[in-house]
Length: 186
Image (tube, rainbow, N blue to C red):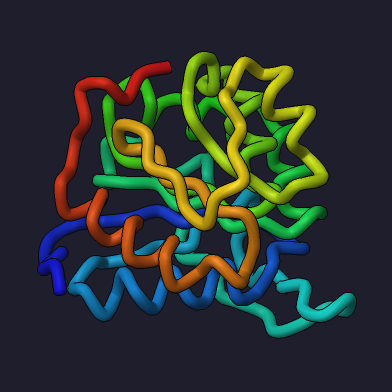
C-alpha cells in the first residue's frame, strides 16, 4: 500500500452526496496515511443519500470560504445526483475545483461528480467516465467519455458508480501518492 503520510486531501461535498462515494474513498485515503478534510459550503453537518433516502450525517471539517487548493495535495469529489448539482451552481465551489487543475494536482470524481468538472471547464480532450446518464453532458464539455470501471488521465481519476469503488479507491490513492502531474491542466 502507498504511504500518504503528510498528504492532505479535500473531499468537497454538500447535502445529497452518495454515502459510499464519500465514506469509502475517505477510508482508503486515511488507511494509506492521508489527512482528509470534508469541505462544504457551510459548517456543521451534511447529510448523505443512500438507497433512495436520506442517510447518515457527516461532520464538515472546513468550509469552502476558509480553504484553498494551497491547503491540499489532492481533491476528491463524491457523486450522488443532488450533491454535484448543488455544487456546480456555486461559483466558489467551481473555482475551487478548477484551481486544483490549474496547479496540476490530482482530482478524483465518481458517478455524477464529473458535472462539476464540466462546469469548471476542465474536461476538453480528457478521457473520462461517469454515471451513464450524464454521458452527453460530459461529451458536450469536450471529454472523450468511455464506459470503463476506472479511468486515469494525467492525474484525473473517474469512475461510474459505487460498484467501481474498489478500483476507484486504488487509483485515487496511487494518484495522490504520485502527486502533481504537469499534464493536469485547466
